[in-house]
Length: 265
Length: 255
Image 1 (cartoon, chains in turn yellow, green):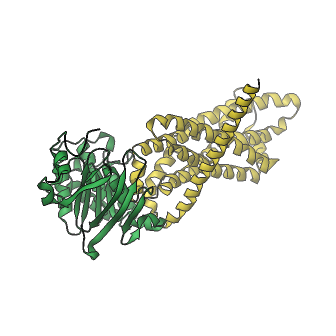
Image 2: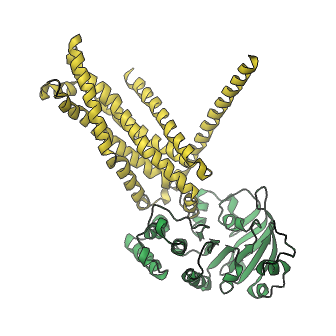
Image 3: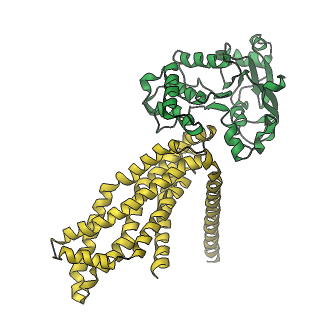
């Protein structure tokens, strides 16, 4: 019995040690990025242009159909549930508030971030890991190119632009697409629906959307690039791509909860 | 070998690297502007450290590598940035950027390091593409290039900034010598240009006999031969003779 307890304690200590080392390593990576800001004066925007444009296209425009479908289905589900159940409790006048709370404040940014992590985060990690293995990253460094600025900066800009735009589009489609689908089961006048939405929407909601876009836009490429630069052999690429996705998702859920507490608690 | 002070490019003093599969033991040499040097030796002889050492690609060594009397290990971020502009580096395996076309790969250092307009870059890159017979694959990505096309693209990228020093690692590995002729001709032209230094690390020193002015052989991390082209050609050094003639017996033993 004592042996099992000792073994479990040892495993827990090892896990904690691993987490501390991981945080220290990520901290060193962040410091290196901050140090790289010195190379900004040498950075020619044109050399980053194609990376930023391609990343924005892949993260934003190419993800649009998927985001639209998910927004539509999610919006319809929430609206149908709200319009069928709220009248039972006599709180149908709060439908607009519920939509803003669930879709605009939480589901829109969160689901958009999840889609971006699943599509672009994994792609970023895999691309950089492969480039590291093919010594392409080393070749950039040997050319005198600051790889941290060259690889990470355009991806952060692209992710922010794409995520912010996708969240707005997600919310609009979820509200109005969902409304149209919901019309098949319940009738709500369009004017009433729009008015309740506008009444429920506050400046704080816009601020939260922008804050989440910035934080997710920075964190997703940052964490995925960190894991993309990690593999020491091609055997490790899938392991670190998987870690990149899972840990970014975890961080996003934590950040989402923290922002909600800070703004609405 | 000594060079005139004004032409001194890089000086390597008593460099030792230990702990890896290859080692360097107290290696010292000078590189002068305009000199074309071939480093050769067997696998694990330490030759693979030469280019990364000169390019400041790692710092885990003892001894000194001096560029203009400044220890490159002590360079700060900005000095390293500027130092790396003085050389072109053709890596083993070529390491072309896989999501860029031939044109974009060659244009990359120009776009990053120069203030040239896109039109000027276009003209410069196009002239390199024509010079190295790459016009047919200008807009192709590395994945569909042949080995010799990749080599020529990597060479074009390395010389795009017209650097003083060109570092080349095992360029003919996996190459058909017939197809590599364009590269070898371009390399010779580069080597013969005034004040341009070419450093080649290779297992095939004889291929560069018409290009290099100096040959340095390493064995087990130490320099066992450092001489002119004429001295190399006599094959009097027993290490050189054993290596070039591929003899099983001599001062080196097969591992």
